[in-house]
Image (tube, rainbow, N blue to C red):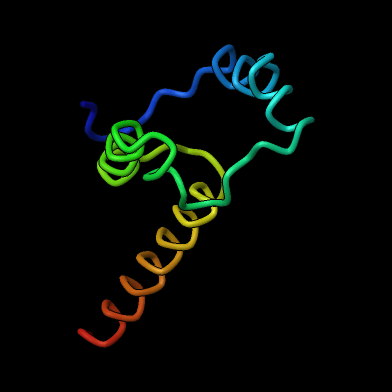
Length: 85
């Protein structure tokens, strides 16, 4: 199991979006609703739940949240320094 930062892989990202298995499942409409992984494959669902809670990546929204936290820290430090004087 991995902890911390996920290293992005462009090859794996493309492979996941262009697989034959995904194409067949999406074209036939054989998808289970979100959150039903426990019924379809409980072992994989448990692994993914732990993995997603113990690692982080720079995917969707993560960069934005880092910028927001950085701005809050910077502004907080300025306000704190101003109040201390």
